[in-house]
Length: 86
Image 1: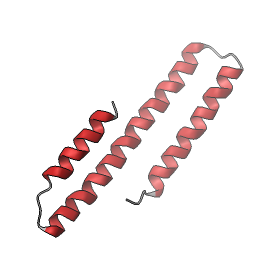
Image 2 (image 1 turned 180 degrees about the vertical axis):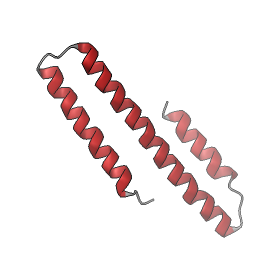
Image 3 (image 1 turned 60 degrees about the vertical axis):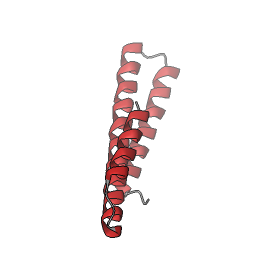
């Protein structure tokens, strides 16, 4: 599967957020601010997972349709990936 530049950019943004959180911790910032930023990163990761799963599901459904097969397995696999990410 090819990943879009959008997904890669999201991950780079998260990487920057995590570096910022580390700096906050090293400076001894208030834990409420650190937890707020950690929550923001977790939300960003969840959104990235959703996007990757959605794109994968879309590709698998197209592939199944081209082969004349049902897309049930692709849908089940996508649901399993989402469940595992929790």
